[in-house]
Length: 186
Image (cartoon, rainbow, N blue to C red; front, side, top):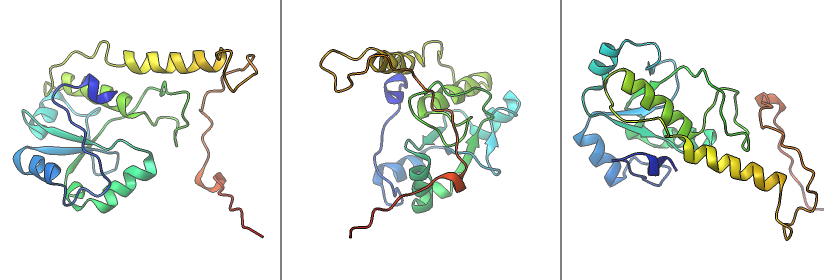
């Protein structure tokens, strides 16, 4: 969905990008950054426009890891070339609209919400000049359709109870509370 909303973007599938020909070609030919949180990242939310522009340049590439948080950490751990990139991040002040899927922390956003936030900040910083007004519309429609299907399943649905309530996935567990159950055969 994010790819469809972004001109001049591409999807490169993998986990370890160290020897990925396309990734290395992009890294060789353009100023590149990695959107990933951390203490050592350049926070787009707290910087002045001139600082953002001088830090990122005119036509930066931003690598965005799309996957679960554990998968994204694995991508970083394995991809020696991505580890070398300067990181950018932002202070999130919005709550994710992705109520169907549980996020690890209350302020964690989906990929499309993160890209939307970064685009707004880059527009403000003068690095990007794109319209973001309806950027999240497909995402919001998807969620709306998912909720509608849960609340009003079709007659031939495997869910027979039509009086279902939506429970937003906003209950965040601490790592110690997450349990894994192993079923050992007898």
